[in-house]
Length: 395
Image (cartoon, rainbow, N blue to C red; front, side, top):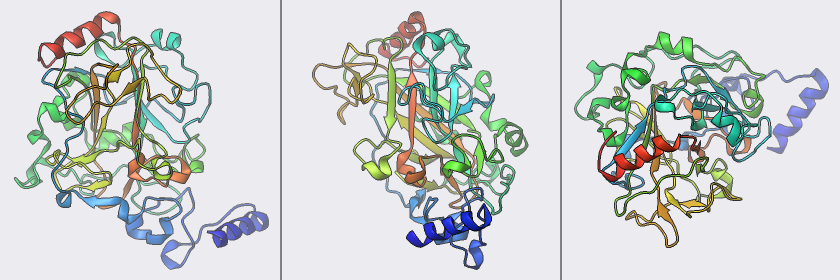
């Protein structure tokens, strides 16, 4: 590392900028403006990440825990999949009032005004992509394709390059999105009103995606976040019940986070990354999943659901709402609220050629996956959510 830093400083002093050496012929590492594909560049990606060991063949992941347990009832808020390209590198919950406070780019659905300066009042006055007047803000770090080399990113992957393939390519062994139930929250949960993920072609994705050609944008290449931003094929926002008790309403302006954006250096205490593939939703992993042809990559983001009954936020943004025990029981002094599960489905390039945005020092470790939410539902809508859940309905 010291040698790399010395070489970098020498390049800046002598030439004003670095001209990256070709990693295929002995260069020290690709420039941040280049794609970094560990399957091609190997150790040349070690300072940028991810590493090859950050990927796992989903067929080799043993079946196991399915995430936070839920009751029968649920309510799905239909907010689209960020077709309007609402993105920034802010986080009004963790870094309020700070521009580029996240140092990586977020995708947003729901509230149209969310940025680092957002307040409860500004969100309440904002527009929304959600049905039924849900002005809540839902956001997560973008996923990028790392396929290819060179200073300019390639276009969105072609149908022959992506892992999802076509319906005809899907075998009984690897299953399809049609095999995934509504509880698993996949593309089948998405109706025509909130965009038809199945109809999205590579050509559509090219038109919608915001690519890494904006190398000067905050949270982008300067922070080590390189490649082509991938638009999710579907986004499912499902509020679920508790398996052992009824739920009470979330207070308006309740703020929640899940996962740890710095888990690679902080350790796994708050890590909640869950990756899988359609057809394999009983196999969750903390690594990037390598899915068989005909299968979409899924990010499953479970939020805490045991509220202290008083606060809408806390100093660490965690202690006011905590996770239930494995059997669903909430700790003493807390009450069960609707449990939010975000499920994001993606077409990705074949092989270990994609990565989630991260803080630079986290090197795109998949364990850093995380998401944020602020409840700005009208009280009447939240009452409907609670009624659906407690009656065991799927709304």
